[in-house]
Image (spheres, rainbow, N blue to C red):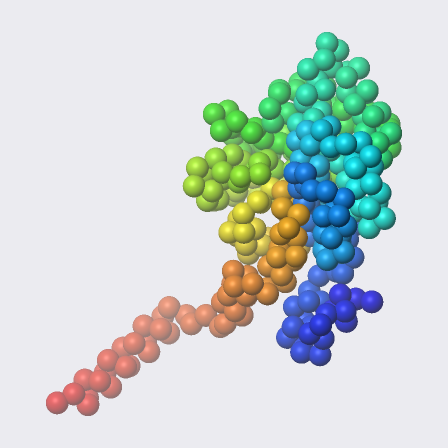
Length: 301
């Protein structure tokens, strides 16, 4: 059954249109929602899947949380998410911790083997905290494929003091795409502040966004933008459309994001109304203003 037909508000045409704007099942090619799990329990996981499972494509166990979650609890959560057809992966920071070992390549292989054994179908490869050479990064991608894991990479630094230029982010993303990654995640952290495309006030740096979007114009469907804040989510939906790939969404916000995507929240509803309202040509507007002033002058005493 489609989500539109399953809605409690079925039969109201405009609501049906909004609900039916996107596909009703997860594992989309575009319009991906990647949620971030910072430590909810088994019951919480089941609750989120029950209400929002159709809207969640990718579930990331943030940073090193999967290493400090009891193994039995982790296994139960992974089983729930697998049953719901939601891809799971450990956060890339955990791989960076593993790389602190004496032999980077052996550490990567051991890490990926363990991820496979635990039941993760995907992994995130990043160097947001610990730098990784291009050769090591490529090896991690290739070895992920060898183990049957789906590799996602992340570009950008978590340190506000060493932010790469947007041109450098484009270069890194293109290299990763050429090396066979599933998607490239644009770093935004859990805060959405002073990293990536965001300034210290969490506003989007339009020039940075333009450079990345223009440089990767042929690969926008390969990008996942980390957008933890509602205003950031709305801005990218308005810029790229409802099927833009968005990540670092709090588990609790998956339903709210879906409403935002479908134009059922102020930020996107207002934008849609503005775009559907015929714009008056500036010249015509001036003519109308002049006519109004002329009429007023005729009736004025």
